[in-house]
Structure formats: C-alpha cells, structure tokens
Image (tube, rainbow, N blue to C red; front, side, top):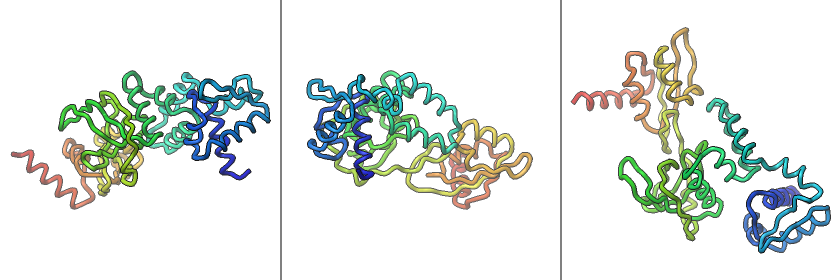
Length: 297
C-alpha cells in the first residue's frame, strides 16, 4: 500500500472514530475518493477485527472493536483533555514557534470543534463552530449583525477560510467589497452557513499581522532604539515584539521589525517620544512629523 493510501486509511479511521458521524457519501467526499473505495476500506477494517456499526445512513467503528481503545486514545482527546492541553500550550510565549506548530498538529488529529470549544465559550463558540463547518465544506457564510467600528452593525456575506491564533479573528473574502479582510469572531452576532459554494477561492490569501496587531499585505521596515521604559511597556502591550528585540546595552534595546502600516508603531512612538529614537526609516519619520502636525491643530 503506497503512502497516499495509508494516509487515506488513517484519515478514514479518524473520521469513523470521531465525535461526528458521517454517511458513506460524506466520507467519500471528505477523502476525495469514490464511495466504492470507502466500502472496500471498511471491508478491510472488518477483516482485521474492527466492528463497524451502521446507524441510519451513517457508519462508525464500534467501541467493542479489538483495537478501538488503543487507536482512539492515540488520535482523540476528550473535551477535558483538550482544554488542559490548550491551557498548557497557551502558557507558552507567543513568540515560541513550537506554540503554533503544536496547535496545528493537535488540530489535525482531533475534531476542530472540540478544540474551538476548549478555547472560546458561549455564543462565540457556536459561531466559530459554524465557521469551521463552512470552511471545511467550502461554503459562503453570512456574518449577521457584525459590529464594525466604522459602519456599526450590519450583515456581511463572506467566504471564511482561515483563523488566527485561538480563533480570535477569521480571514475572509468580503463578497460585497471584493476584498480580503480580518473579522473578529467576538463581534459576530450569529453565523449563517449558506448553500452557495465558494466563488472566489483564488483570491483567498492570509495577510501579515504585525506586532502592533495591524494586518495587511504590504510590509514596511521600522527600526527603533528603546529605553527601559519603552522596552517594558512594549512587551507588556505587544508581547510578540520580543521576537524582534535585541539588547544593545544595559538599558538600551533595538527593535527591528516589519509593519503593515505605520499607524500602530506611530501611536506607540508618539506616546513615549522621550524614550524612543527612530533609527529607520525616513518614510516613517515623515509619517510621524505629519501626525504631530495634525495633532497640533
């Protein structure tokens, strides 16, 4: 059996022992193979000692299967285990690359809904779960009563396709505006999964989120020399900045980072101007001068 077939068998086993039940056709669609192939794999499961239950139109591997306990313990977590694991991972510093890798791997081995429920609560969890469903099925969604600082509450028809860490935001293609945007999941009133499949998948792209939590597709370099006060406040307010900081002296640090726009960096610099020196760039210095001029009026 080649590697692709082994992967399909393992994915099928995971689906048939997870918290969600699937029909033969649904399993075939998720694995990208024919229903006939699903039946062949299930026959193989039976031959090696697994018990297969048919419940209505759905099929599952029975818990009384000879190997069920060992396999289910390897590839699934209970809700309590998921919560504990997520807390442990969350305790890692946001700059630790292992944090992102661990979350990605854990998401791949147990139901995404379980992980979402261990991270977000209440109405937000329900909305995130519906977004997960829409992403998996490649369907457009309506974000009902989305609260925007600029336009207030209104419905948004989007194609959601990726989350940021901890499901705080979701990358979407806004069908009405024709733009890629980040929407905060906490600002969504409710999520309606439509019957319309994605029409703009070729435009789905994940932009860059800088240390000041601004996002976009353009990157601009900013280099700042920070004193003790600026250094401490930067790390308190923007923990990801640590990855781009280098200590120069006993009370001096150099921040060399990329930003999507100058707004976040300018706000930080203007608030602590006496403790920050702009090393680069001239474009950023010009931006700061213009901001100071605006504030002086």
